[in-house]
Image (cartoon, rainbow, N blue to C red):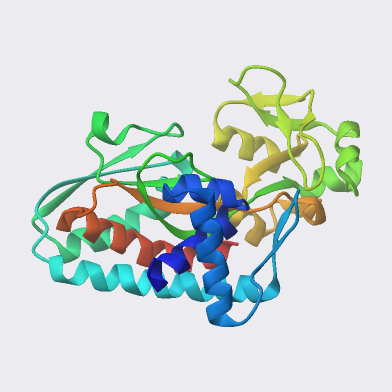
Length: 295
C-alpha cells in the first residue's frame, strides 16, 4: 500500500468513525485498514487513533493529520485532472438538494460555462438520491454520510442541523436551555414522512415531536419561523441569511448533533472522462470557501 493510500485510509477512518466502515468505503478488509493505519502512525511517529474494544476516537494529532491528508489528496486529484484538461463539450448533468442548489450552484455553473463555452449544463434538484446511470449524471452534490456504492467522493465541507426561532417568539415563550425544553414549545416541522417527526441532538436519542405547524416545503417552514410560530430545525445554510440579518436566532447550539459532510460524487470509473473531472474540480473549488464561511 503506497503512502497516498495510507492517507486515504486515515480520511475514511475519521469520516466514518469506524475501521469497519472505512474498510467498506475503500473496499478493503478490516485487517488491511488496521495495518495501513498502523504503518502511517509508525511513519509519523505519533498516535492518530485511540482504539478500545468498543470505541474508536481520533487524537488531536489524528485531526491535524486528517486535515493535512485532505489537502494533499485534493492537490493530487487536481494534478491528476490536469493531463485531461481537453476542451469540455456536451451536456454536463448535475444533481443537488433543492435549497442547496438554488443558493450555491447558479454561480458555480455560470463560471463553468464561461470557462467551457462549448458545454451545456442541466441541473436536477432533488432531495432523493438519483441513480447515476438511470439519469445520466456526471456529478452530484450529496449531504450526509453515504452508503458504500462504488462511487467516487470528494469532501468539500460540512453542514449541520440547527434549531432556530424568531426574536419575537423567544421573547414571548423564552429560550430553551436543554433539548427536553422543546416539548414545552410550539414546533415547526417537516411533513410528508411516515411516523412522528423527530429531532436529533448530541448525546440523546431521537426525540419524537408533536408539531404545531407542518409543511413539506423548506421556504414555507422558514416563513412560519420568521412569523413567530415556533421553534424550527434547518440545515444551517438554509437559514444563513436570516441568521445574519437577525430575523432568526440560533438556540440549543451546545446540543447540536455532529456536522454532516458535503461531498461531490462522481462515477466510480477508474478513469473518468475530462468532462466529469472538470465539473467535479470546478464545483469543489467553488463550494469549499462558501461552506467554510457558512459552518
